[in-house]
Length: 344
Image (cartoon, rainbow, N blue to C red; front, top):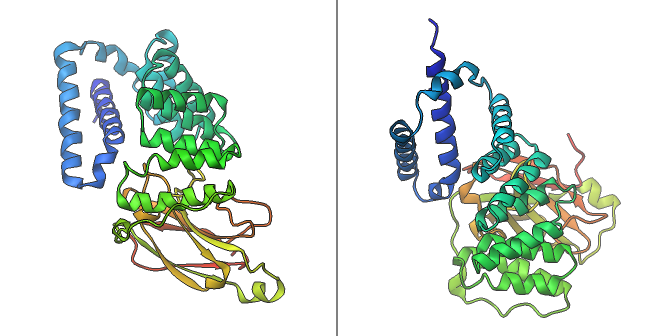
């Protein structure tokens, strides 16, 4: 049976529409999956119906002759369309997200820059563009242009959590720990108790780097219970490694979960003393240093432990990491990590 090209194109367009809506509405999924699916479907049908009423359905006949057979082809066609008609900030932003999904960080950075040129006063776009520059950098650093965009986003939307978090990250990267701590402290009154608890860890580390005292102890009420996708992690030192290596007594152990293949910033992290090994911890949303991304929103993470002589969560010379373990969430089985064990 031969499927008409118009049907193929319509199906592809429907899939792209639903994919975009799923991406845009993803934050809603952390509440309940049912309402999220319903909203995606209703909006998807609404978009297609609106196009039938006000768009140019006849144009499908011509476009369908070159209907893409893969995401790569769809991106190539979108790029060609943007070259013909470049004044489309939404198109450039969609291209950037697609390129990022395929791992083309440099292409995403360039496409976001074009989008910002056309829509310079959109806070969400400015933040995405700034993040894309950090992801395209080998050291994952926010450069001068990225910082300028973050500052503008905050000026347009004061207190924006994601922009404020990234601005603090850039300040700490630039050896301005006191400024980073102050920037992050401004978030404490606007985030939930679990996020505030993990954010305070980052703030206290930055304050310590700046020679400042830690924040006053948080009220007991701010301690949050375990959340969805909580992970039990067991960490130990390899006996042979411990026998032949002399470790500093003030070294720290960081238990870290991050997005596989994503940015180096953890989605959950806990710090413990070397003397605590072997130890068992539970990573949950309360351990997330990023207000915009928590364990309960993810389907998969990479978990590992880092032995840090400097006491900093950022990887440094001489630090030692366990072999990372990729975990599909939710998971009830404990994750076993051994620092110093040879890679399999």
